[in-house]
Image 1 (cartoon, rainbow, N blue to C red):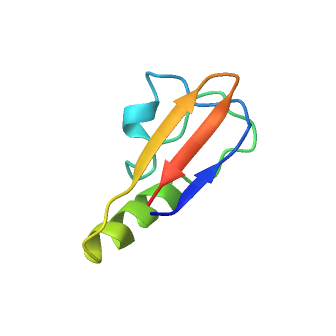
Image 2: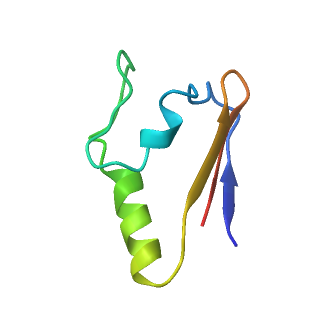
Image 3: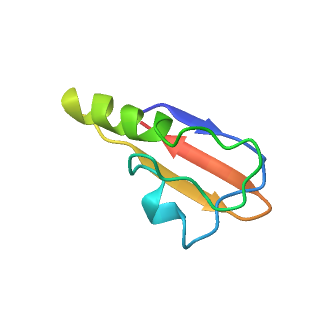
Length: 66
């Protein structure tokens, strides 16, 4: 397993279930990307028999595991 953790703003609980959906972007987020990065990661991980997961707490950061 590979885990990447940050100490950023975190992802609100209502957005967390959607972060791996294509083109999903949090509303009112400055500098947001295209909404494709995490969906590509999920697709590649699953294509190789793996998985990907996300945990996050607002104000504390996020952890993505593959």
